[in-house]
Image 1 (cartoon, helix red, strand yellow):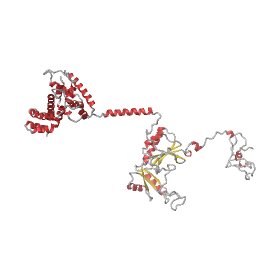
Image 2 (image 1 turned 120 degrees about the horizontal axis):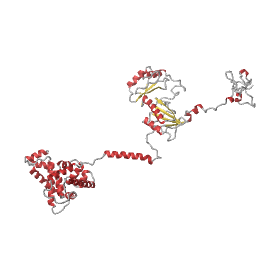
Image 3 (image 1 turned 180 degrees about the vertical axis):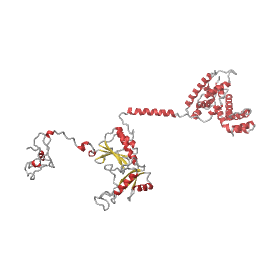
Image 4 (image 1 turned 60 degrees about the vertical axis):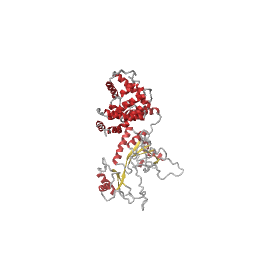
Length: 186
Length: 357
């Protein structure tokens, strides 16, 4: 069943849409949640919440790619869940490591409410990604969107872990320069 | 901005990029161009460094050398490295190339059943006529070879005529061209009643002839001064190249190997036997010392009784046979028999001294 047929089921308010989406993208979403939460039970719960969000969002939204749509929801839900669980402590896991790494990009100061133009930032981010080589772009997103571990990246890209770390450091530095050039005082 | 905010914002990355990042793994590229350039540079560096660091070492196997056979005294030299017999050269014609090897299926002349020790020359009339007819058919004029033979033609010759003392024409056909139809056609061209024999061959006559041009070119380019001779031997289906007194250098052998990659189209032999060296000294002997006309001896008489030359000093005069001393005759023989024993017989050359009054 392709995405359009699944989305059509969502629009028809057919509960079979959730089963079809779970069957097709359940594994994908579970992997994202697992990367962030590092807990199988929490990840499964996160994925179930993903389909609930999809049921609530479609309609009115009609995503071009159900996979990306569901994955993005999973990521946001997993990050929110992680924040709730680690509100009292800085736990381990890839999110903590990724956040430490991203500290090199940002100042850490509070951003005043409404001071950030999210749309403009999204455009600047996409401009940064567009300027990267295909392999570097994939490496960056696998680390900071999918929250893959360094070891997983090393296996995926056939690189040594140290080479992955070095490449990510170079990409963060490049992102900081690009965002500043675009007028974002991070 | 806090890091968690940035992490959230990264979640807003373009959908196509996010999808692509989940797609095929992009493996590190192998930079063929860079690798090839590096390899070429390395080859240049090592190639240039080798002769620099190995000035005394010859560049062995830089190029293949043609085989050659060393001949001494008309036979194959038996010493190790001097013998560089070609691979598969077991049927080398001995003692000299150009002489067809005896047919192993035929006994030597004079040893055939009922054949006398010195058999009469075989009859070649029929085979010769067939030879001429085939040569004309192939484009020959007045007994001369055509400028080029057909591609199947590897040569023709008359055999030894054993066992019936009648020579037969043998025609060599290049392998791959030999078919019963072609043999039948050749037999028709030859005409006559005599049977034409056929034999397979590896190289065409045209090819072997062309090798002669190649050898001439090599000799000219390399200014080869070694006494040599070469020619096509159709019975052996090779071009024989003989060097006399000195082996060819590696440069020449390398050029010959290039000309004859399989090493069996050209048979190179080196003769070190002085009797086989054709030089001016051996043929003509040492140049004579100049003779002063005043001291040049005059023969006593000419064999045909003609006038004797007059000595340069005017002495003696011309004496004819009847004027010669009675005890002398041309050749210095004594008239009246040989000297008796214990007589002082003079050496013969005394008889050739100028005659005086």
